[in-house]
Amino acid sequence: MTSFIEQRALYQPRYPSALKAISSLGAVEVGKSDPDISADQLSQLKSLFPNTFGQSVIEMQPAKVESEQKNLKPLTVAVVLSGGQAPGGHNVICGLYEALQQISPKSRLIGFKGGPSGILKDDYVMVERAEVDLFRNTGGFNMLGSGRTKIETPEQFKTCAEVLKKHDVNGLVVIGGDDSNTNAALLAEFFKTENSKVKVIGVPKTIDGDLKNKYVEASFGFDTAVRLYSELISNISRDAQSARKYYHFIRLMGRAASHITLEAALQTHPNIVLISEEVETENKGLFDVVEDVVQVIVARAEAGKDYGVVLVPEGLIEFIPEIRALFNELNNIMADNREHLTTLNSFTSKNEYINHKLSKDASYTFSSLPTDIQRQLLMDRDPHGNVQVSRIETEKLLIELVEGRLSELKSKGDYKGSFAHQSHFLGYEGRCAAPTNFDADYAYSLGLTAGALLNLGVTGYMSVVKNLTKDRDQWQAIGVPLTTMMNIEQRNGAKKPVIKKSLVSLNGAPFERLKEKRTHWKLSDDYRFSGAIQYFGPAEVCDQIPKSLRLEHEAYHSVKDC
Image 1: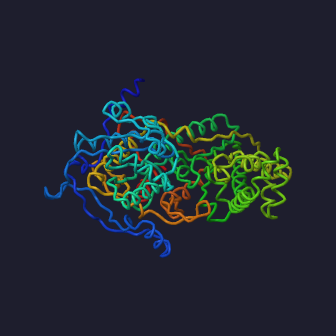
Image 2 (image 1 turned 45 degrees about the vertical axis):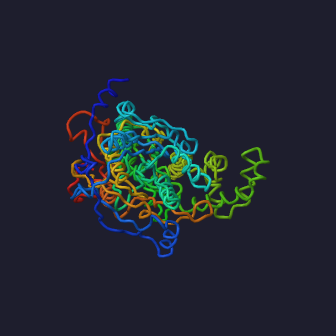
Image 3 (image 1 turned 135 degrees about the vertical axis):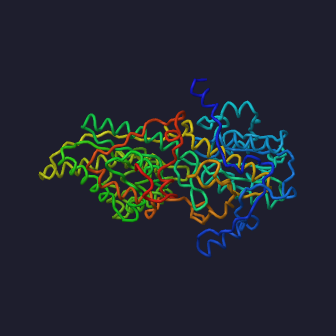
């Protein structure tokens, strides 16, 4: 064990004052709220969740009279880590454990290993005090491991119920993203239908930051991941300014939304920031995006600067209209001709075969892409036969197209600079970092809240902590029905209920701040050195919160330095 881990284990997470006495908590209804969806979708959700739809949002508060307090009988609770890792997952488990101990020292916490598949396999460990002390404030999900298995078939639901009944489980806590929490809602509905005593609570986790809404202000892990990426971007920016010879194209995680890219930009002030949602809204084609980048490079060259930093969201390519249309055609062609494609052994033969089946516009788009990107589109498919967008090296695609356009301009005498480049992908580096103080406190609070919700006997809820821009003791612990966050989407040819992903709002304060600043950033070298994550020291250094979160919740002009 390193000295850092030893010292970090001593940090005591801070949490809402309302959670300091979980054994005496009651629930206060603070309103009902249907999802903001069409009447038809609302009807579908009601039919899919007849037992759990329409529940009230509740806030945990000290019970006014003793009769309101729940019986403090020991609880047996199961917990599972679902999906990709995010800093703070261990603290959710630690907070949950402490909540159960408050309820009764005889309570038990069962951790299923390897994600939801651990439930189906009955592969578990008992989480004891030793594990809690060992993993407190650490990154990763290695206490239990994680996985992406979904419990969605009738057989899986039945197996899950049998395994949990075998262990006499009262509650199941699912720590995951939008898909995992959708799964939690389906499990809650199933257990309710089967008159099972198992209550299900979800916890919002994802570094992408796209699990947020009017109740969920942030998902845990986002702050830590972006701070780590921002440190690396800062280092690269300083290198660019020092060497003065490279353009650094940096791709950042975030397939469905550009929250990471936006927050990292606010922290580091790069020269060029691409936001997928903006590209889609303005209906920009691939070569429009390239031209935007080229114009900045040409302008910087005229100022004697042949270097810079470009931030690219991972999912950018999927937001470009002609690329999305190409993806749809490719997916259909490859699905309809799967058997024949297996007989084509070379990339060239597959390329020619598929290109002949593409529409004229899609064929033009496909042919205009670099060969390496074409290869990725044809060779790398997910289990459903779809393009694996996360594997497309969008930053390299942009570099190649930008380079070609600059060469064209140079031949006409319209560009006199030099274009050398470096590409980077910042992704897995941030998923298992030791959580910031904010994420350590937030995740721990979510665990305590999940335990309090189970003690109140509710099911189909998400553990939510609000007022995150305030001091920790002023944070608000609430429970929000999972169905309140849902809509109906087309998934693999079928309509399914899913928790709606949150995209970057182009009318929101964070994006407005970016728009205000980025014209200046293009030509200046206003790079900000965010530094490494600080765990020990003054609060103004160690207890920062995401800039985008502060901008969303405080007066626009009161937030400085971004």
